[in-house]
Length: 372
Image (cartoon, rainbow, N blue to C red):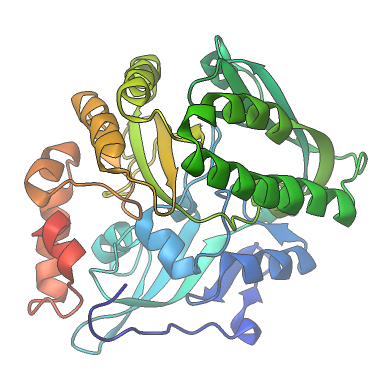
């Protein structure tokens, strides 16, 4: 939240243009929720998405939004051209051939380099996903990431030995289709309504949390359907929460998850929200959490209003010891001093920020902490 002026970037859907090569130029203030069906109408789609689509394109890029898939990268990897308004009012068109230094950094720019007004994304032909959601024993869940599925993630409900798994694969089939009623039942009634009730009961009676979580794990993962890619990737999140997510080297995932479970036992006795585990391929964006390395992502959550400091702090200590990098758009306590060693291009990014915005007009308390 800004402490001064908030800028609303362009969001007019009539500004969306898709060329014959599948390059989609879109206003940066448009939300992913609005963009995805527009791309589908053009026979196009983004190859991968996170599980929330409420962000603007600019915000999703700036903070390093990612989905899951060992062969897939984050959204910033799809950027081909950026239009950036800098602190002196200049409008820069940035691409690998024009202002390449700015282009490389601004793909995940934290809002520190200027205002994104237009983004050109490389899309792919529209596709459907076959989703299989199932509960399975927690032991061996990490091994699912070594399989052939296009996209895999799992949720672990604390104090259980159950993993709620989600496996999504591209398909030419159009059945079994999830109808809108079934979608409402899964996403709204169970995924939001019942889960909200579980969180309230857990807050009122913490001793019931292990039992609540065992029930929730089985109810959340019991579905199979085919739908448009963006409808499978994303789902509504109406139960409010606080979240911290860390990226660790893919090879460190077993150690990271073991350490996280120990932190839960010490500090997360009343946590009803599941831990989310995903993976992504390495990329070359300087401030990407996956820069230069295949990565595993571990996200911890608590229901809004519940204490989180001890739980998140214990998990963060585990991740830091494993060379973890925090998600820029979620809670963490890191500072510029200890983030610098985590990113080989950190100093070059800060120098570029200082050149484009010497008076730090775009800075705020958060950017002062993480960039200096």
